[in-house]
Each structure stands twice: as C-alpha cells, then as structure tokens.
Image 1: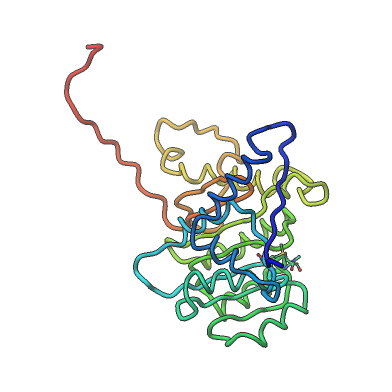
Image 2: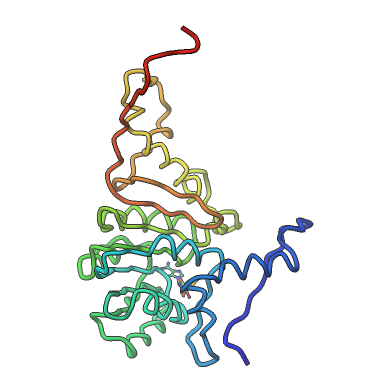
Length: 263
Ligand SMILES: C[S@@+](CC[C@H](N)C(=O)[O-])C[C@H]1O[C@@H](n2cnc3c(N)ncnc32)[C@H](O)[C@@H]1O
C-alpha cells in the first residue's frame, strides 16, 4: 500500500481539469524536490495535505542560494507531516521550525523534535497576545505560512500581528484561500474577508503613486489601506497569497531615446 493519494477538484464541465489532463498537471506539479518528498511518504509517515500546485511555487519561493538558516513559522500543525516536508527540503540543520495549533494533541510532535530544530506551541492564531509571545521566543521569521483555521477573520488577525515579525525579504504565505468563499469562513463583510483584505493591501504597493502630485487627493479610505508592515510584492495564485515583505521599491522614471513618431 502506498502512503500518498490524490483527489481532483472538478471545475464542472471544464475538460482541461479532468481525467488525463489533471494527471498530466499533477505529474508536472510533482516534478520537484517537494513532489519527491511527498511521494516518498509511506503508511507510517505523518500525514500532510497540500494542494499539488503549491509544490512548484514553494520550490521557486524557497530555493535560496546562500545556504543560510531558515526561521519558519507554520500556523496549523494537524497531523505533523508538513514538518517532514520542510525538514527534507531545507535540511534538518538549516531549518528552525515553529508550529502553532489550537489542538493540544499537536504538542505530541514535540516528543520527536529538538526545540532548536522544531517546536509546537498550543494556542489560537486569533489571539495576538499568544502570537506575540511565540514571536518573542522564536522570531524573527524568514517564512510564515498560515495553514490554520482558514477563517477570514483569523487570517487577517494573524497577519496584523505577525507581519512585522517577518524579516526584510521574507515571505508571509496564506494557503487555502478558497475558504474565503465558504459560508462560515468568509467573514461578515468585505473588510473581514481575507481575500478582499489582501486585494485592498495591494494599493500599498503603489504608495509612491498615491503620494505623487498627479494622484487624486480624493482617494477613498479603502484605497489606502495601511499594511501592518512594509510589503514589497503580493502574488495572487489559485488558493494562495504570497506577500514578499520589505520596503517597496522606488519607482524610477527612465526615459531612453530623444525622437518621436508623433512630433
Ligand atoms: C489544514 S490543518 C494544517 C495542516 C498542516 N499545515 C499540513 O500541511 O499538514 C489546520 C490546522 O489548524 C488548526 N487550527 C484551527 N483553528 C485554529 C486556530 N484558531 N489557531 C491555530 N490553529 C488552528 C487545526 O487544529 C488544524 O490542525
């Protein structure tokens, strides 16, 4: 019996995501180190569930050339299998992993870990005091992944507390953003919906433009959402948001050539 399995989410009548085609996509998604680690799981391996298309993204985002240590915070531990994924990718000596889960049973993973390599804390991602306490003991972080409750309000609350504890150049990633469409998870309003919140934050990437003299002075408040920490880049992917933390880059207007077809 193999230790891994897949399930395809149908997009309803779209032949591009059914049958052979989805197997072909899956094979492509698995063609990287993360795919090999997932495939090597046996029946005795701790369980981990990721959408397959995350894997090449993680390969792209997490591949560093400098061989430095990685401080990694993951919200949502569940069965404990994702630690195996990160450990095998970065190497045990380079990874300092911290897991957060509301389920006390997840603390059992600490029996298998040396605290300087990996440590699980029990508490809620919606509790800023708890998150600040974890960050004071284990931060600053290079990578934060929110794979916790998937409740919009929790996602926003965690980001507001933890974003400032990510190093300049680090990543804050939210997995399974599809839950932002689920009843009971999506929040009561646009401002409490996590996807809408991050779309709003996209305006902060244009902060130079909004301060430019040509910019209207009448921007609505929701067009100027202040991020809890500086964000350089936001990537929107299916079910995933990736915030590249750090000071926005300057916009430098550069003209080349002196002639014109309209002069
Ligand atoms: C999707 S699972 C995590 C899976 C794991 N990251 C993996 O890749 O295998 C979500 C976990 O979030 C935890 N969780 C739910 N609500 C939470 C909250 N408010 N704060 C922290 N963890 C929470 C659940 O107990 C569950 O173990």
